[in-house]
Image (tube, rainbow, N blue to C red):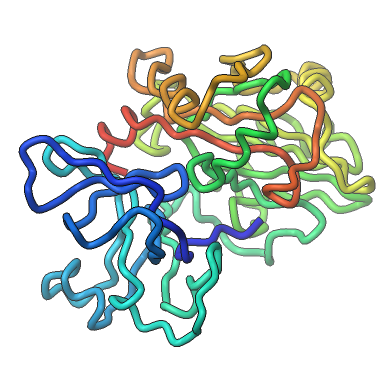
Length: 334
């Protein structure tokens, strides 16, 4: 599913912020963001912009850019001690001409919003060989706060939560006579200096990768994302195995078996059990907030999947989502 950065949503709740007269906190979907006091009432429509949205240079974004002639990136911030994630604006504050605007409507393109992408270091960038192969899904998990109705699909189900490793995602595949290595968004030319290809050679996957599969994982270690996990060497942690011919992901147990044969690390499991029927979005986030890596620093979060692959009506695809730790976000100001 393509991420919708700017959508029409509803203000679900408004709460005061202690010792703050000019601002209050609004709930939109599963997110909480700071808004001007009195600007909204519960039930009002708004345009909601997710974190990592890159807002264009335009008159309606001047109040954010404050004279800066560059697009403005939305981050997780704290205002008067209140965490704020994303931006909610009244409909009359943005240049939208469609009437009526429907709840859930994607207005990302209409408003010129794009996704912020971290600058890629040279050893990760590589040389583009072509687009990411169309026969394998890209590795991009949706956040639970953007799809709170997912709660109804996972309550009472046996789920596995795996640690979200803080690195760079890659895909290694073997389809027929074709062997390829990809970064998040493109297939890469073979190179001795590129970290994705170096991993493929180090793990001997160029010879051992089973035909007809795509192995997806996170590469972590020195020079990657500040090495927040504290590894002494680059390490590939597999998190998905895709059957290309059948157009489906294999279960975690099948991933474990294949990776054991290949001598490839698998992302650590941090939750294995039935989801409490009373859990809501905040409970999933609280679980992620408590996790740390082996060096004691806050973990990035958790990726949640059912024991057996299940279709999600909410996501219109694979049931899989992530909860990113707010402790991690606050420490690294993502």
